[in-house]
Amino acid sequence: MTVLPLAHLGHWWMYFLYGVPVIIVLLSVVTTTLRERREGREEKDV
Amino acid sequence: MTLSLPVAHALQGKTDLPIPEWLFAWGASLVLIVSFVALTLAWNRPRFEENGWSAVSPRLSGLLVNRATGVLAGALGVFLLGVVVWSALHGTEAPDRNFSLTFVFVTFWLGLVVASVFLGDVFRAFNPWAAVARVFAAGFRLVAGQSPPPPLAYPERLGRWPAVAGVAGFAWMELVLAQQGFQAVGLTPHTVGIAVLVYTGITFIGMALFGIDRWLARGEAFSVYFNMFSRLAPLEVRDGRLGTRRWLSGAVGWSVVPGSIGLVLLTIGATAFDGAQEGLLKTPISDTVGAIVDAGVGPITSLRLGNTLYLALTILVVSGIFWGGIAGMHTVRGSASTRELGRLFAHSFIPIALAYLVAHYFSLVLFQEQAQFTYLLSDPLGDGSDYLGTAGGGIDYALIGATGVWYVQVAALVTGHVVALVLGHDRALATYGDARSAGRSQYWMLAMMVGFTTLGLFLLSQANQ
Image (cartoon, rainbow over all chains, first blue to last red):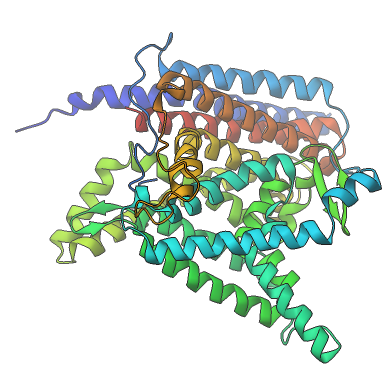
């Protein structure tokens, strides 16, 4: 029997729901780190 | 844990939760973020670097820690070791009716963790191998007039690695050898008895070669394992005197010894695998075992190879999260090397190891300890004896429902990770010197904590289905 990939959508959706907080925190950490680095470089240039 | 203990985790589907399980992961993450912000704002100086040990009154200390209590505790440890070996080798092969399995894998392995967290390094007093070795050493002193000198100096670069190997062996026995399937019958009491005797031999050899105290501090798996958790406790015996210290403060500096990071990551990884084995990894393991069988390997060997592979993979994933977070921390200006940062911050993960253990095994301990202290204690061989008159006892599975267990699991994971954040933040203040850099470094710690919390809740939710 052919199993459509969509049949597993429920599982992947569940993985995504659990992963949302991790993704949000990781994105904030990365953007904050990059922003602070940029600000540090700009301060140095001034 | 699949030791054929009745209703290992005693969990059925939770039908009466007010919100979906994944929302608990969101809530837990929010608690961690709020805790992180609160720490950044209000915790401005390191408080755990000096653990402030102070002796309790000499009378109380003398009452609890003296030669007589030491001998009694050691004798009790030796007696229990004897009962384990006796029941394992001469008792019934039915795992749920034999004293040895529940004692080794629940009362000893899990119960002593809880005791260590609250009371300090209690295993040091009850360690049967140390008690026997000390009697031999005292006999030697009596005859030779001096202490037996250890023939070898312990290689310091080995650190705690021999103990890590011992804990890994124990975890493998619990999580891989105990697996049933094909003709494999899981872990039998007889196998446990033989393993205990082999480990006893190894421990005596280690103590004879490197000295009793050195081997206990570095190589004896259970001493090192329980000592790790006792670092969180407010009680500690120093130079024969009982004293108190700040909760958690004993953990600071624990992880500078080689092998310590390996031990804490192994503990988290093994527990995570136990959860994943029953849910998330069930199908992949089954598929892999099938593929190994198809390649012509015997079924029992395939079963063990497949489980060993996924156990190793889970520990690698846990280690990857840890070292990924540490590498992120390294990007903060003024950071030490990644390796050094790992050593400086790994003690923050002891509460996570504890949280994973409590979350995963709470129901097992709650139910199995009822068996341990009733029919297993009174009928250790499972042959119908009734030494203490409690052989007719049973397990009350209605003591707590699946929903109650779920709330305990969530609370344990959240609390453990908040405590880990506190330890990490405190260490960061001491390491980086200024609050700003310390805060920046802890962004990465926060990401790791959120990762481990959601992973833990996800594994539990999958295992509980």
